Image (cartoon, rainbow, N blue to C red; front, side, top):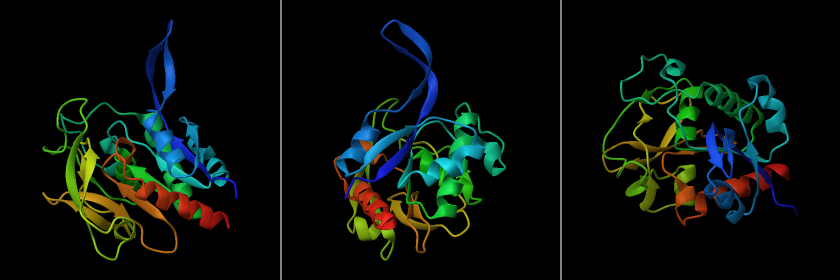
Length: 229
């Protein structure tokens, strides 16, 4: 059986390489390497028109929504906190449309950091715009422990408390409709959410692409294979 095709969303930013300094669709190499290590083929999904999301998702076996900029607070009905970063409006519109298309079609979905927050917002939830203790230093990935909630999809993949790579200053506040928390940090921060039901939709607040534990990505790949039949 061929490997499942897994789309990964990208940044849209100014970048320099060689002699060039141009707008670029960017994705840290750790993301496609994670998908490949988990048994999938990775394809990059740069921001596009939201109306195209359903057609794009229809060609994928699974979707990964990558980390990145803070979700614009207007998306969940809030005024921006002074510590909230500048918006990435093209990414917000495109990735929310992708999330909604994946949920509507039953396409397996993994949200990573920002991706988990977008999953929550897509379901009508809100975000804490700033919290301390989950960033070790600017540009430095830290680690802390998360504990799974028994009986959840995440707990079936990772049944024990685990140390995870973390870099975030925002988190889930009010859970979106139908979502259930599936892991917590020691300070009570929701570290994973999922959508119970026949599909496979999981968001993790940490960065599995920066670690060695492949159980979450292997779970996504297995769900992609099962759905493809």
